[in-house]
Length: 301
Image (tube, rainbow, N blue to C red; front, top):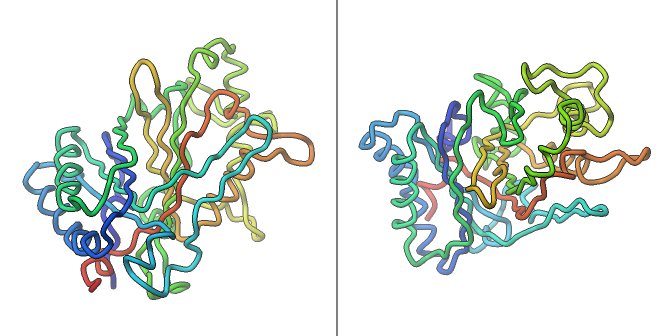
């Protein structure tokens, strides 16, 4: 049974590094990626951070140069969305490197080692370091990821299975970096903030009378059988006093659930409703990837 990369289903990270990269030498990058799972295992022992985990994911444009054909089913470039002032841009990236753990020094050590292993085969697009806040709250003050799958639910939601057997134990990855306008958000009353999110701020209880524009009303989507579509989120706050927000990362066995959530957030429905949170947080990046299994990476010629 192939083994998934460790960052995908792990829980409880406190710090993370999110790196997007462009490939300049596909053959050299493929050789370096073969050693990434072993590098992660070694650094987890050396840094004494048992939660230290990593994953690398590959974009649709560079997949043929790195791994030829076939590609994972559903792997495609991120498609930009826009509806009035709400934007979900697409930004270029060939690789996504995701490192998370319990300590910032161990996360830095593994991210730096992975960059060194890739060397001149890649160039950096963006590097963002995230951190968990008290009670896992976003910088808006609300608990983030309340309905994220836990325990045995995580591999079921995140990992490809028999539907694409050549890429079993891999995962489709979607990312967006959001910049918050906290000054505007904090001018809202508590009731207005709770209506925008759809949950109470103090105790994280879903509102019985949440409006159709509430964030959770937009992103909780069911399939034809009434089952809620699931993704595994590894989102964390990031930034400094000038620019700050949420780095959103979703792993899923198909890219479809995330896409449906994003469309419900950005595009107005028949009654004109869209995600109220997007009036206070704007996406500045957007990219899609596939994170192959450890076995796939290590056995690539």
